[in-house]
Image 1 (cartoon, rainbow, N blue to C red):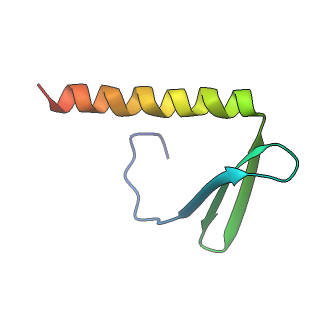
Image 2 (cartoon, one colour):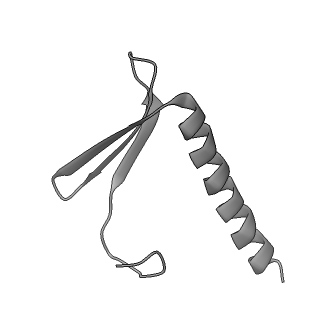
Image 3 (cartoon, rainbow, N blue to C red):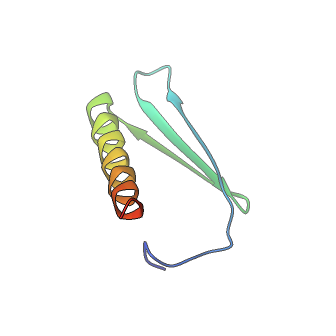
Length: 63
């Protein structure tokens, strides 16, 4: 499955700080739990990539 492949899988995602000073992205789907911890700087980079992708989609839709 690639980034452009559609899927009927639904998942829950939570994002928040941990007690150890990390940022956790927690994904749960079909009984699978994936906790991913990032240093604050890494989390900011991820947020910037998400924002850039959203802006790219908005720009394409505006055409």
